[in-house]
Image 1 (tube, rainbow, N blue to C red):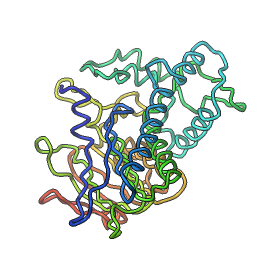
Image 2: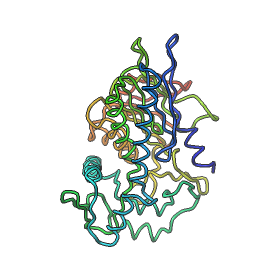
Image 3: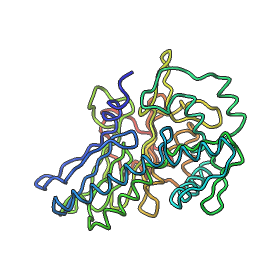
Length: 351
């Protein structure tokens, strides 16, 4: 299997279509949250863009280190206290994140549940160097029998305890979206009105990319690209305040006996979801748009063939899904925004 970091850098790329005759946005890249991060800023002097972008990336790094799931962090310290049956005091920020993640998990019937960190670790995804090995099935079933869930956490102010010692938090499917929202707020505070933030394919737009009012155009990764740097599956224009998020089986995975096992685990079965290759959601502007783009794509992915019902339940109107057989489907709201870039791709409209 290719080096995970190299694979992520190749596959998380977004395609930005240049506007002819307009100056290129200032750009800065980093590697945070286990993926490639990119900040583009337009319409301000380079010195202002550089300072504003640096503050965004500093906050990303702080969030990554503070809420890391398997390295020493505030989150791992809470997980240790939960395992020991102790209460634990957290920061107001951390308490707010837990409450928000609990609400997001409940909205999706806990198909996405940040409380299954122990299950993720059993599958070997709590590492930067994923190994191609299956977990002990008895250990998986024993953990499933204890039904760990973020819903088991109880908060009194900033004090946290758990009804279930098997709970371990993993914010891997939530924190990137939070970071998008925080980045937009930070940039606005620094006088930036036009920017694009990309965290491994979770993207949020602020304003436009140039003085002519050109919308930011991005590409949606093909889950099975043909060759390195292949064309995206589709492109679309992101409007001010919109966010887009993709969950795919190609970000973190391993293969055993020709079968792919990805990091998106179904809490009902304890095994990776395998009915979907990728799901992309487009979220309208509003409070928490970035967070919703990250967290809500997961239950739609894990729902498999029932994806449309889950999307409706979550209030997500614009969805693109690629099934396990490579068939692409889209809701009308998403289809109207897409420009298909793969020749002869048949896109099924699903009302």
